[in-house]
Amino acid sequence: MTAFHGPRSHGEVVQPTGQPMAGRMSHVRAVHRAVTILKCFTPEAPTLSLIDLEHQVGLSRSTLYRLLHTLCATGLVETLSEPERFRLASGVMQLAHAWLSGTKVADLARAHVEDLRDQTGETAALFLFRDDASLCVLECGSRHCLSVSRRVGESHPMTHDASGLAILAFRDNKPRLRTPGDVERKELVDAIDRARSDGYAVDRGEFLRDATSIAAPIFDRNSAVIGSVALFAPNARMNDEMLTAYIKLTVSTAKFISDALGLPVVGEQSNVAGLRPLKVHPKAPQTRRRSSGSS
Image (cartoon, rainbow, N blue to C red):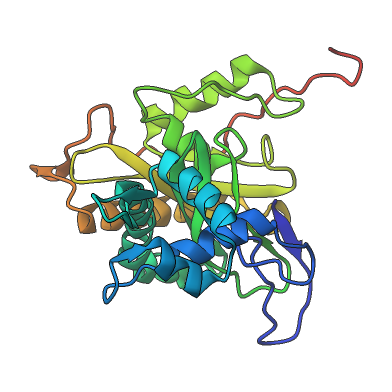
């Protein structure tokens, strides 16, 4: 969800949707129990017997067996030889790797994203490609009273705004395109092609209503696009001169982050196939919208 924030008191914090929803929704008991079992394993006690687990979680043996069977089937727990003992399986490492990779990128990018926000005064954010969606892993909010917020932990279709289009433009295997409401598919394809040609994406309300978004892709050490850095501002505050300047700042920020991730450099340019020299188009073409009566 994209949120427009009006005036608010200094220091007010809006809870991200990715945070626990205690008090708003009840727990699923089986899931809670399974997580409790996983947390029983520690560096000091990497393997546990059924009796050990039974004492720690306080569940009946039959219930504990069913939960352990499910955790083993999902690759999160595995059994050892007789006498029967349990330990965490490789599935936990896969989850940890996914979490660490996102955290590492966010940590490396934080100073650059903050600098982009400070130079423009607008909301700057970092997105990573996750499960055919664009996931916000870092946001530095605008200092203006009227601002655009993407919120850490939220994911949205890649076609929702410039942050996703910048990623799509440089992916070889593109996910199935989900066309936003009243935007023609051809216009979406043209926007992706234009982003690949320019080296960045711009949306002036064609996809994200009432807001301008600018995004440039970020690449890892294998020259593979893994996400984007994006800038968001209300349309009312964005003119062509500002847009030109902000595009350059956003592209430069993306390059700094890619360099920090180890993107190879050939000569003076990053080694990314298809990445063109920066071309700034202050006035992005407007997208045709379907009439309300169209199907």
